[in-house]
Amino acid sequence: MSTLEIRDLKVSVKLPEGELKPILAGVDLTVRSGETHAIMGPNGSGKSTLAYSIAGHPKYEITGGTVTLDGEDVLAMSVDERARAGLFLAMQYPVEVPGVSVANFLRTAKTAIDGEAPKLRTWGGELRGAMERLQMDPAFAQRNVNEGFSGGEKKRHEIVQLELLRPKMAILDETDSGLDVDALRVVSEGVNRVRDTGDTGLLLITHYTRILRYIKPDFVHVFVAGRIVEQGGSELADKLEEEGYERYVAGAGSARA
Image (tube, rainbow, N blue to C red; front, side):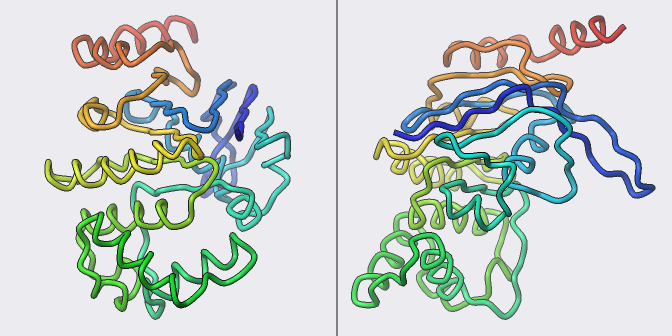
């Protein structure tokens, strides 16, 4: 059982002129192995800032609070140390890595995280199996990472990584964006396979409820103006589908005033 604890996290973004713009205004959240937490909120509310701050993106500066994984200080770790500790981020916009094949990328990542290289006699089968489950052509293993991939193929590749690397905590930043109905179903099934092992906690960031029809959250958190303003079970997502975020946004505006 692993636990990711976020306490009073405050984060600012570094603007080009060097100033800091506050984004997160004190976030409290606990995610445990086997749990699925959905973070929902309007554009600009800070959801992706939360994801990238946990992962260690240099654009974001932590100005207060703590993040721990199994009691270890995540904020004191470098990005690669966070990955080896068991944190995983599926990005909203996966980047291309020219000159590095998918097969080499995944085997190198697996080696770095496990501390030893996977056995060649079994690794090839594991890689092919993961790609087939995500309905990716195994020939993609020899292509450069995300180079020339469609949006759906990039998202499927993210979940292939998730299945093979088996992190303690996975943050999925708008994994549903840009997916058609069939791709959304396939990607969601991959996420559910990882969740059903009970070994990984999921933090699922999304605007919409459509992915939550396939991945049922245990907890839903409404994120507005850099903080969690309401939380509940999966029924809260249904409420948001019907009512939207307007009353939360209006309430946040009144609070600032």
